[in-house]
Length: 296
Image (cartoon, rainbow, N blue to C red; front, side, top):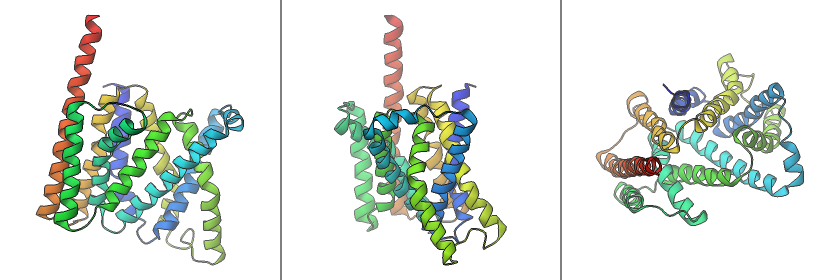
């Protein structure tokens, strides 16, 4: 099997089983988990940079303030995304988070159309319209606006948009983002220690270990993902991304026994139909394009 496919499967599998990790920390407030994730993610990428002796890219930031501004934006989006995700998982809303990541690829098409002047194809528009119908159905028939799903989809969608136009690669960008998040997060955790309300080192050893390991849990799938992105096509990468929300959905329903009513399931099915149309159309378009290249 292609190494890129293996890397992608590992990345999406790790993201898919993320709820198990955060559930093990459900006795820790989401805000504290978020700050530990910020701090230890920075430590993780810093150790990688030290090992690789990869510092030349810092000169680019010194000479171009716009880069720092872009990554301040991506860091803010990551912070919102991470907090909402952890909070949702630990409040028994794993199924809701999975909907966000099912919606994300379709939202990315809309963002590409609005900001990058990309032109969605006919069946991509059909998929977007059907998915929007599923969201409206969930909102009006279920009676609750799916704010968690849409927050996760929109923050990750805009994050991907900004990273697509930014000049730094995955490791460099993650290093800068976590460096930006490190200082306010460290300040918050130090205050918890001063007032003796923190969980790190004060509870069971398992909690302390998991909080410290949150940096590896965050950075490792990102590194596998960036390695995969360089080795396989975007079509394959896009198709494999459904591994993560599918696993999250299955965990929520069959492991953590979240209730999925018939009405809610109907809304999900509508979104899944949209994704099926989007995926099949993308694969067929890629095959037609490859045949044209071979015939030239």
